[in-house]
Amino acid sequence: MNVTQEIIASIEQACSQKQKLNIQQTLKIITAYRAISNDPELIDKILHLIKMYSKQELYSNTLSARQNQIFNLIGLDFSSKEIASMLAISEATVSTHRKNMIRKLHISGAGALQKLAYQYLHKNEEL
Image 1: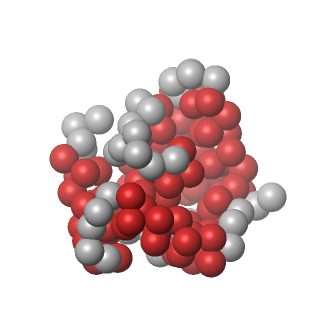
Image 2 (image 1 turned 90 degrees about the vertical axis):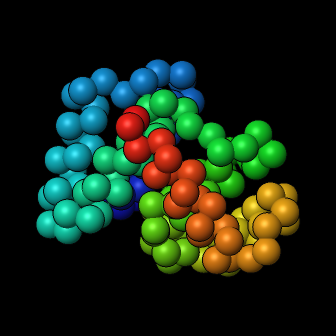
């Protein structure tokens, strides 16, 4: 398991136990990301991801837990390749989830999915 997968796993573990991330957990995650990247945009995405997970934000009860997770990552502008790497799944699996989300949400395509996910996350930026 790489560092990214370990960080995502620790966020998911805290959330699955209905715990909010405490400041030490959050700082540990941010520090780990800074160690592997000096990209401020990536750090901003990860901070938003942490906030989202700590508040248990779901877009829709229609989507599965994994689809909600991927939906939020799409809204943070992660590519399918990045999502696959973070979640330790194949790009084909991400693609299948995208197709199923488009169908379940009754939207027209990948562009509409990206736009919807982006708008949803950014309307909740005050997290």
